[in-house]
Structures are given as structure tokens and as C-alpha cells.
Length: 195
Image 1 (tube, one colour):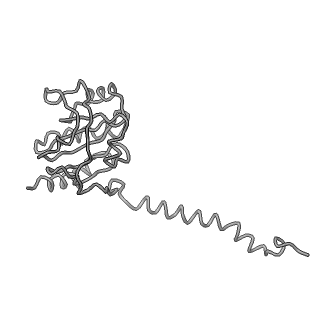
Image 2 (tube, rainbow, N blue to C red):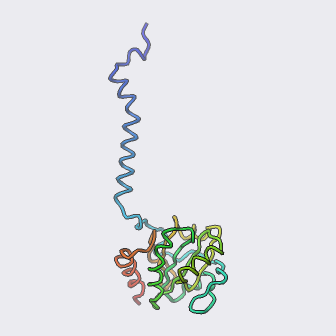
């Protein structure tokens, strides 16, 4: 009497052994195709077109902007003006790289720059802004990251464009660069500035 294993042909055994490998390679190929096929800064946000989440963040003490102490970030900051909300941290390497572009944007008096300092120590955040200069009119400290989660933040840096009506108009994932500033962010700002 022969067992079932003895009755299985060698070619069928080979297929059964290779089947998990074939499935894995197919899934890996699909994953890498999807990962490489898109612009990571174009991750959609469910908040686009919706009011900015409730935001009540305390200020980063000891920081000034245009010679005045910087206040914390609340939804009142969005009333009646176009605001770029940049989520940043001193420990974030790309955040260091985007500072010149934030400085450039801060010179545009048609818009307001607001910062959410994400899971950072106050001392390190102050050192960061003292080293590079403070482009933000308001800066709120999000020590536990809860507010950033409400905003739909995947990681730092991320930048949100909030219209005069307090609704989120655009989201940029990743650092602001010369390319995405000229190609995407400025056109979105110009759209938000239209009456």
C-alpha cells in the first residue's frame, strides 16, 4: 500500500514547493511597481476641502517673529488669511533642508506661515529656529503628536495650505524643494489667494 506522498509525482511536488515563492515574487513585484509609480508627495488627504482640525497648541516660549513674541497655534490664526501650516521637528533632516524655501515663503506678505513643532523638545526646537531664523508667524508645540494625527500627518515635514475660509486646500508630503515650490505649491497658493 503506497502513501499519498509517494503517489505525488516529482513535477507536482516541485510546483507545490515553488508556489509560495511565485506568489511572494508576484506580490513583491506589484508592491515595487506601485511604490515606484507615483509621486510620494501626492498622497491624498481626506481633509482637502474640509475645515482645519481643531487646533489648540501652546507657543514655543522664547521665540520671536518680526521682534514680537510668537503665539501658539489655534484655529483663530486661519481666519481671513491664507496660511501655510508646516509640520516640522529639529530632529528631522529634511526639515533642515527646507528652511531656505520657508524663508522665501515668509517674505510673501500675502500669506502667513504657521508651524507645528512635532514631538520635539522645546530646547532643541528653539535651537533649530535660532540657528536658521524663524519664518513662522505662529508656532504651536505638539509634544505628543495628537494634533498632527488629527491633521492626517504621516511624517515630518508636511505642509498644509489653509484658505481664508479655514478649509484645507492642499497638502504637500515631504520637504518643500525648489521644484515642488515652483511647480505645485506656488500655483496652489495663487489659487487660494483668489477672491
